Image (cartoon, rainbow, N blue to C red; front, side, top):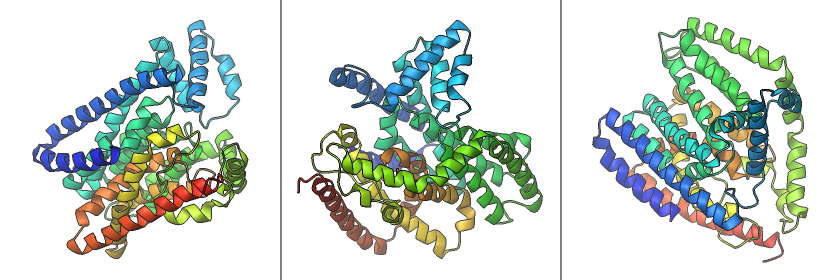
Length: 427
């Protein structure tokens, strides 16, 4: 149902909304995205309450932890003393941004879970608008509308508005960073007001996921070094390098640099330990230990695959199977767009989006989370942009390759399902 709804309404809305003026399109996009997400938030809230006795997903881990920590902080805020919370953090930054934000929100809304998720619906709808602005600036209005509609309807992006995890807020910051950074690079009359937002947003990403902050600054540096001088002049390049170096120097000089070094130094060990744990835990997959970065890297655009067989204790993964299949299909058009950009030597024109997306995907492919759908989410909006651009390039000759791609995806899904069964001694 997720797959049919996504492709049917993507096709219908792309055709019917193309007639709208830009202002009307943005309004329609925002309101439709908001209604879809609010509907999911309300449904999932009562669904999880009915199934689990609480408004959290099956086997809730992070969600319950964030809720507990935010409630604790909200209590301290009401008592007028949050020093114990900073002592608890002890200089740790990664993953502290969301519970800190949620705690302040709880202090205002009387710890309301439903209000927190309705705000997520609002953030998700605004993210779709930002995707339109970013894509329109880079690929034109037609592709921009298509990419925005993809984001509006993408099951994965809708799902997380109904969960009590940080992904929706983190995604908004990520897309806002890329959109503002792109505007900064392309604006000939830039000033401090243009520079400050993307640099600040990149800094904020460190408080949600360390590797996102690293990827953001690496993407800006890559863009500054290699983008055509027609887009970024020499004087602007020097000033931007100065500001970015100043901010990077601040982060590198403190605790965050230690976190970055720790993440990088332990990447191989963490991946190995994660795979071994998946192999040895109850109902685990004994073949999981062979799933390393060398396996994930070549197919990082396509994974994760949906599971078409029954496996124990994976209720949450079942809900997102349709969204994963949508991504598997759209990956063909991402690859098509990538080949076109390389063949026509246009990679310098889209360097910020490309360097951020590829940089992040490469990092997670070498981590313990290369197969985890949740960790792919920050790259998903930009992959949808690439897919929309790829669709705009399709010719009759490409259609036969798409049919072969669908066959390949089917074989891969069957193989993945066999892998999950065989690893548990069920095949």
